[in-house]
Length: 316
Image 1 (cartoon, rainbow, N blue to C red):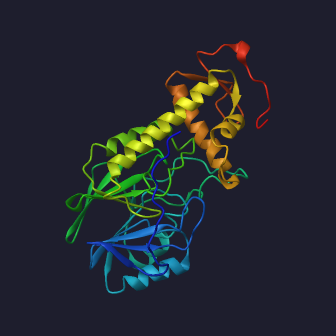
Image 2: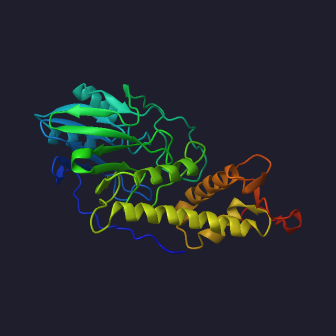
């Protein structure tokens, strides 16, 4: 399977607000991990009157560094791409300190995953934005304007934020240079994710600033990267269909075939990402499940015959 050209060199310092582009500053939270890379990037747009994008985890040191670095400036908006616990919890203490409204698409619509397998940084169920943003809505500041771009898939409430005059997109977890995005049903949706990627191909943004890791810009063209992401997902869907053509499969068996060298820490995410792919294929009429669609169900291609069935237990 062809690989995506990832970029993992990340030039940053913890605890310091760094100027990374005209009108854009960044503070990286000290929350490294398998799903966050070196940590969550909090972005500051503007100077004097500023918007903060993804205030980050509930980490007093990160919040204090953000407030200290912006001393003497006015935070007019706190923008949240989505409400996973590495992105939105700091919104509340930041609002308490500044009075700025919190802004996002809406609260999380999913249910917390209480399984033993870590699949993301978890859901911030407490986050309810003061201002609910709609696709295409513009937020005005002094010398800056931010456009809201709804990109469901990673979560149903995921937003990207664009600076149209600079052709910049703050892409959250939707598009990253260092890794693919994790799609976790039921709130995460593979069909929505692929449609959202295709939507970004219609835009003219030249540089993406993700919530984790380095930016995507020349010579790593964002459109080329998105096309590679779409092709990667389609190839994965084709792999799943090819396996299901041989009979019934459990997700555990599919994961063993699809991800033979995976980090054990990522097995839970891989299983749920495979579930997202199966749901996408089921909606397209290409796959059926034995019983309710779930992690422990058996799946087969609609074109396969029952005589081909595999009856091994999950993971065998």
